[in-house]
Image 1: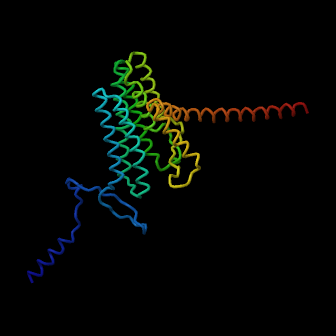
Image 2: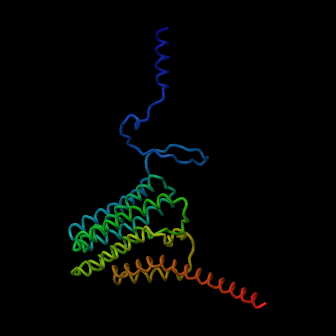
Image 3: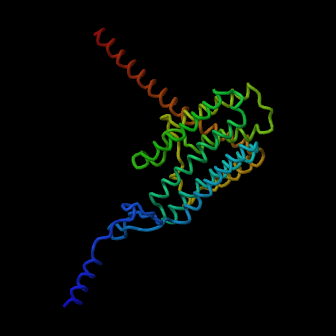
Length: 295
């Protein structure tokens, strides 16, 4: 009887619910995330997807390398590293969607990588290149850019499920980083004076403020890379690549500036159209009132 009692006791003890390791303060080696199965039920999946997060890690490394290169005065290498981070940042999300390896962990990891590559890296690189000549005004401009990048990423994360996928609210942080990085790349051999430093500070501040603006920019996320396109589209892509190879920093700076100006330009065009429409409606109403008075 005692043996059976001990056996029942051991079985009962084995059935007791286990306390999660995180509640006991123990380290958790694997990331646990709720996913929806094919039947619609939620399951707890351990671990993270390797391929998209590996690409995100490459983007993070590029941003970190840009900071180190900028500290050592290698501004050309720093700017190129930021553009490499842009390419990898554009790949990780598309690879995750194509391979069906999207996860909440990947979204948060990507945002942290973007903060380093497109927030801190451009700000520190442009500060080391030109803004340090302006003293406190220079580091204030660099900090403003970094803070705006953080605010822009935080706003994007909170609006990702509610905003149209085809547009960005505010200038995307990679594009703002492209403006700053291409400016540094184009002038890395130039003797920077106070005048150029003021221009660089103005570009940095404007790029930062546009990130937290309400201007709408095309995101190109609705472009179907698996579908068919007209043959002229391939010719346009080849032409862009050819132009970039002629003078990469200046051509990339021109493309980034044109895209950046498209947001305010589109807003002004819509505002002028709405104003003209309101003016036309007001004129018609005044004409009708005049006719009524004559009668």
